[in-house]
Length: 378
Image (cartoon, rainbow, N blue to C red; front, side, top):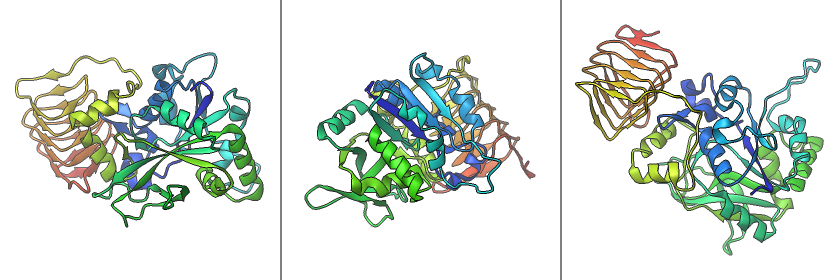
């Protein structure tokens, strides 16, 4: 896939994730004990042989820059191609503030225009999957299409894909268009928001949308152009989940406690890479008892942990009971704390004797660096 350029667009709507995305974009959400959501998309592209990847960061830039750095963790710190980060720019001489991400792509169009690759893979980070793009890319090339869409046949009995895009076909199996899943059908074809597109088509689409003012977002420009070009769809048959609500974020993390899911998600088509943080092995103390949980390195555990995801450097003191919860980096859970269906953001402290109980459909969220005691959260 050296003839394909990768683009990851981080302008996802993160309002439904509330406190979890107050200071970070959705792509930077910690996931699975040691990863970030964007790690899956980056690793998929790298494992498939894409050597040039542009990340369009959106407005919350700091955590993106901190995590991705030079791209070394993904072997993208190279002289030719490699990782490129595109941050928003502002024209302080203009009284008009432009809405959407399309202007950011236009301002940085030289990245695409002067790239040697003839095709582009455009994707968002919110779909969690381990996918080999080589088969989908070859299918796109063989079809002679201008735009290729990757989709997944899903049976959504738990409404985990409400609000996601769905791909529609006619009775002969021909592509008709892309709509929004409103939950009217349990079984449908989920758009994974991954698109192959010829570079010439991308540039024409971008300039046409800018000149006509027909779109503010790249996704909007793409959708309004679908009827002008030949479109081909490719079916992905592996595991996929989406991170677009607190409940979906919680459920996607809990999914990896299933050995079949975790084996596929982290290894099937190549390893998922992330920023390296060297820490010692987890220390299990005298009273530690662990059941069906994912424990990262650098932790100190002296309590009971069940059906939970514990990130790096977490300290859980004796007498604690942690069930069905996600505890992020460097958090400290003091003695005799009881957690059930709880998400604790990074560096959260739970003082002695506190009980926090959420619901499977609406977990309790402890904010980043919060201190929670019996008197309340500070």
